Image (cartoon, rainbow over all chains, first blue to last red; front, top):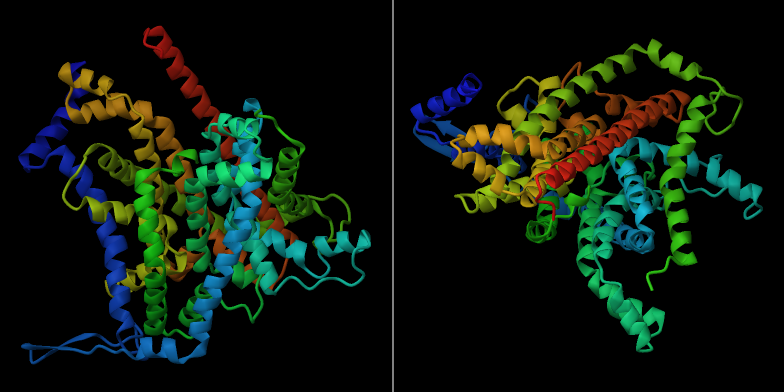
Length: 313
Length: 272
C-alpha cells in the first residue's frame, strides 16, 4: 500500500519544492493555455485589423516600428474599418446574416417546441431513447448533414421527385442555391440545440398546474400561452441563443446550400481571407462581428453560469 | 392529465423524420450502383472499395484520426482541470475572466476562432500543419470538457473525498483514487465529445492548417464543391456509423456504471 502512494508523495514533494500548491497548478495550466490560445489570438486580430495590407509574408504591415532604437512609431490604420462602412457588400452581409439568423431561430423554435413538448410528455420508458435520438445527429458531422441536403434539394433531387410524383407540382422547384436552402439548412442543423434545453426545461415542469387551469375552465390554447410557455421561458431563451449566435457567423451552410446572391458575413470573411488574401480587412470584419455578438455572448454566459444546459448532453 | 395526445405523437413522428430522413437517404445511396446519386440502379458496395484506393481520402483520414486522438486526449486533461477548478475552487483571482474564456468558445463563430488562431501562429512564426490543427482543436474542445466535468462535479457527494483526506490521503491522491473513478463516465463522454468535435471540424482546421495537412472534412468539402458523388456518401456513411456506434456504446457504459454505483450505494446502506 505504501509503495503505491510513492508517485503521489513524490509529486507532492516536487510541487512543494517549487512553492506550488496543487490548487494553483490546477488553475494555472488551463488558465495559461486559454490566455495563450484564446485571448492572445484576439488581441492579434485586433492589432492586424489596424494595420495596412502589403505584399509580403505575413501580408500586413507592422503596427509598431522602432526608429533609431529609441522611439516607437505606432501606425494605426482606420482604413479597414472605414472600408466596412463604405462598401455596401459588408454592411449588407452583416444585415443579411442577422436577418437570416433571426428568422431561422424563430422557425427552429416553432418546430422544436412541439417536439420537445411531446418528448416531455411521452411515456417515461420512451424518453431516454427519444433523447438519445435527438443527441445523435448533434454528434454526427455538421458538414455531412449539410451535404445530405444537397441531394434532397437539387432540381432533380428527392424532394422534387416526390412532389412531382405526388402531382403537387409539374416543374421542379429551384431551392438549392437560394436563401430558402440556407434557411432549411440552418433550421435542420441547429434543431437539436433548440430541442435539448427546451426538453430539459419542460421535463421538469409540474403538469398539475395545467390540470388546475383546465379544472378552473381555462381553454387549452390559453393554458399554453398563460402557463406552459411562460414557465418554459428559460429553455426558450437558452435554445434561441444557442441557435442565433453560431448561425450569425455560419459559413458551411451558406457556402454549400446558398447561391452567389446569399450574403452572410462568415462567407464574406472566408472569401476576403482565402480568395482576396486581405488579412487586415478580414480581421476588421471579425472584430466588428465580435462586437455585434458580444452583447448576446456575455448575456448568455451570465445566464449559462447560473444554469447548465450542457448537462443534458 | 399527463396524456400523450395525437398532436404530440404527430410532432414526434414528423420531427424525427425531419432529423433522420436526410441521413438515411445518404446512407442508402452510398450503396447505389449508379454514379448518379439520386437514381437507384441496384445494390453495390463498389464505392467503399474505391474509397480504399483513393490515396487522398485514406491519407486525410489518417491525419484526421491522429489529430482527433491527440486533441481529445489533451483537451480531456486540460478540461478536467478547468472543470475541477470551476466547480471546487470557489472564488479565485481572475475567476470571471476564466469563466468567460471557457464559455465563449462554445458559441463563438468558428470563422473568428479560426482566423484569430491562424494570425497568432503566423505572428509567432509557428510552422503550420498537423500540430497547429491539434492545438486549435484542443483549445475549443477543452471548453466542452470543462463544462461537462463541472456539471458532473456539482452533483458530487464530497463526504467521500473528505473521508479519504481525514484518513490521511493527500489531495492529489484523493483525486486519482476517489474523485476520478467516480467522475470517469463524464470524463469518457468529454473525451468522446472532443473526439467527434475534432473529427467534424472544417472551418477551424482550414484556417490553421499548413501545407500537407489536409483533414477528412477539408477533403470532403473540396469534393462536395465539385458535386454530389457516391464516394462522398460512402465516406460519410462510415463517419456516421463510427460516431453513432461510439455514442451508443458510451451511453451503454454510462448506464452500466450508474447501475453499479447505485448497487454499491444500496450495499453500503446509504441509498436514498
